[in-house]
Image (cartoon, rainbow, N blue to C red; front, side, top):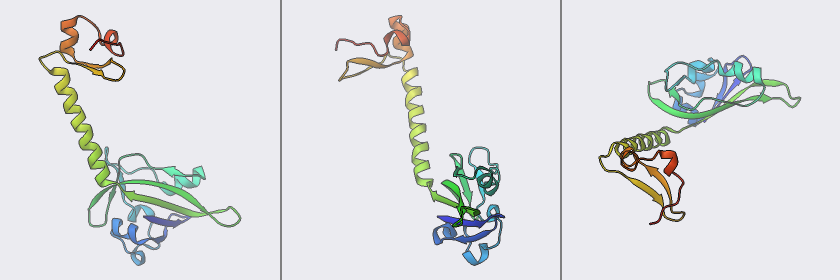
Length: 168
């Protein structure tokens, strides 16, 4: 998805994908401030980021918004997006505007969050199991994981066991 602004930050163009995600048609979006059409927030704090156009103009280079950027469409639909912005220069190298490029990563974000939650559940179960558990990498025969119960029963620290070879 692509949105282009003039140097003042008002939209001059948005492509059909940007129109679909933002909920704004090109004719409605032209001459509106970028922040009105590309309504983004931090997914973690629900606060808007600093003015993107000003940041690009100040740096004169590519700006990537923080991970966990949330786009709120005109209808209120929320999308996780990955995005960046860069200056638009004329033939003489003068900055004439800003181009914002973003893509919908909602499904990828949901998969990553589910994986993170699954890993946290596994870690909790592993660490709190009543039985001692030691996990070794078969190829190297080195311990790669040891839970608290095993450490307590064996009388070692994690540092004393991890990355040490064992006989299988």
